[in-house]
Image (cartoon, rainbow, N blue to C red; front, side, top):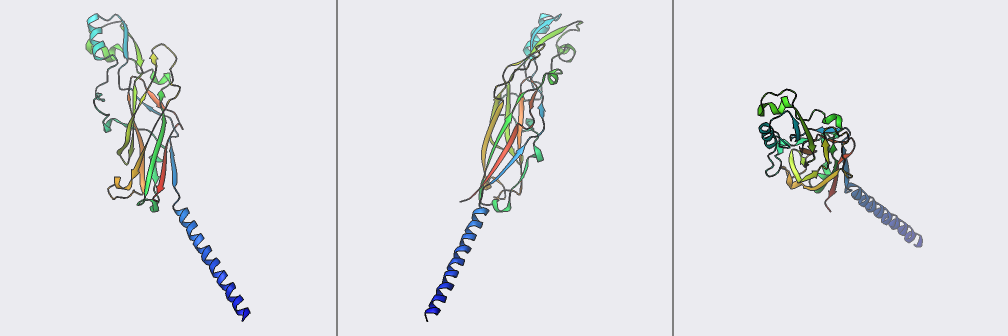
Length: 255
């Protein structure tokens, strides 16, 4: 009889141990399944953006006062036609998307499409482009001043390229997300001065949270396109250096 009880005790012990292991395995599986997902998109190549303002006109040779005064009022550091007028926020259609690897696309796992929050954060370095890229910028008499002045032989214009603002906006599947970020360029370039001032910290950044309710199907799409649009409200040509911009994605499952 004693042997029977001992045998039953062993069996019960095995069953309890098996149940505990099964529960522990199941719990461990659930923990793995609900782990946060982290993804990053890099910008591996240099990207450039042109100016939208005319240079600042500083001095002239051989140009009449009347012509010069009109040019100063209508051209000097003024916005070029067809660009933002400075009212309200930069229109969506004037942003140009910065080149990102894989066209900014990330895949959202099926298990995270209905019960998760997504935190997106980004950083971007912006600086004035190399001087060789600025050489085509300056105002010339033939291209700019002739409509305002009488024909002139030997006329010349001294000019600067003042610093200004760069506007950055994040987009998800083509729609604006998060706040518009304003990055202030510093310094500027004096034509004939062969140095380009750089900011000590050329980085701007932003972040925002996505909810499945933000999307028409009330769930995250399988493929999400994350982009950074930039608009250059200055007379400087600017650049985003290679491998110095990144978009980070953190998918946090519901608790």
